[in-house]
Amino acid sequence: MNAVCGTACEDAGRYRYFFNGLIDAAGLIADAAPAVPTGQDPANVEADMGEFVPRLLEQGLRKEEITLKLERFVRAHAPCLSWATRFLEVGLERAQGSPRGELGR
Image (cartoon, rainbow, N blue to C red; front, side, top):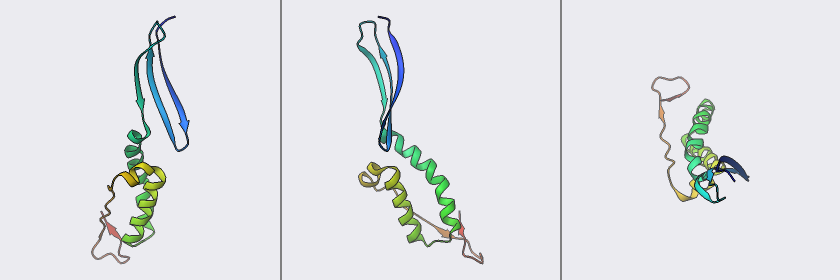
């Protein structure tokens, strides 16, 4: 048998487990590098939230409503993050002189 290197993906409900590994000539795993879902979550949540927040701001919601929607968003995307850590803190600032009370950046 020859040594082989491969990559695989396994679907597990909400998540996908990625594996990269090397099997040596004896058929033994010589190296393995899994990418577990918890390690994928922060980057995915941040990227998706970057698209979601502007839509919430356009709706003219109050801070409490935005916070609730973002908490639900995180729980739907990354349930482990939502209960294991308290990382979501929403801070909004209203732009002065805005006729609609638009949010500033």
